[in-house]
Figure (tube, rainbow, N blue to C red):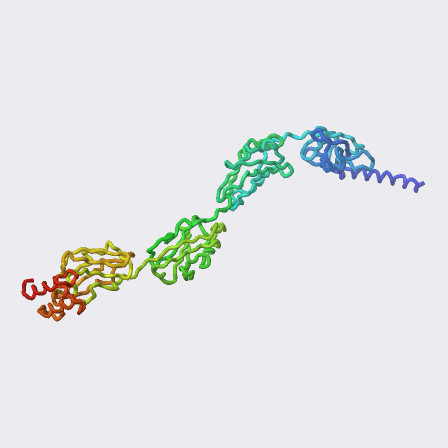
Length: 494
């Protein structure tokens, strides 16, 4: 009996111990409350992959992802359910969410309840957020943009394509067409023709552009970019100028371009200088970026009075890499810097028995500046006269106003005021002398006597050659009148 009484008390003791221990487990989570049902978002079946979340207050108490369109969980014993659990008091309101949008339905929590079918409908809050621009192409402030570019902009959300037009998406005054890609939220402006090179353009989006919910851009949006330089450089001036003459032999040859150039392309092979024989001239090349001017400096002075040709090849490019459209060349002629010289005179220097009616002439070695040859620069002692110049023979002539005195030495002088056609003066004044004839001295003995009469007679008869003194009348002929003149000289009448 005692044994039976002992076993009777053991269960009671265990129950009492358990009851005493219950307060230590007061925070044990409530048993789950399972849910399942249909899910409709904005009057449409929720797509597969929609996350359904249960919250009590702000605390998430369970979630499930849809695997069937328009349905979360299942009614079957082994189907997944949305189990709501946690430290939740019975009767607490459960809120259900599809993504960030709350369902229209709620439910009171019932710990350990059988699965509850609760069909959820979600009406999303209206979209009131303005769309934004997330990227542009070209990017803002881009440079060297191709002239054949299109201009595009990508938005932060789906847009109302009907609001994106050539009136709301513009590129300065450029005409073009606009398209919208709903898959990438990207609008593209395509110009009707290539843009201008080296030009800054501004694209603008107006607030007429809206998203699919009708929200316009918060403000007009614009950005700028600059196209690449695609214009070939040109030569705007040269020194010496094309076909220039009288160029100094120590000149440097230069070309000024229409824009900044790539200095590395201007070399001795792309900027050349050749003489008429096509012989290349050596020299150095320099480039002044401030004036866009390239200069060829010959190693030595150029030859005078010579034509040279300078050439710029298409290897020369501007700073953007655009070459000259074609080879550019020009020619010039260097100056004549050689002083003229006298090659002959008439009468010759030191000549004697020169006729008193002579003219005095001088022939130069080159064409002369006629205006510099006059009675001031070409003189004959104190003799008055006139001066003329024959450009065909390079000969200047002094013609006395009257016959010269007989048996007199004269000196003709050319001053350095006389220049050639290029302006080069005589290196020094030039002079020479001659002596006029003793009229009537037919024998050339320095006397006029009876023998001279005989000499004149023999000349007239053809027995002797004419002599300067035999022309006693100084009319250029030897005839009977000269016999009479000699007689008068002997008689002292002349």
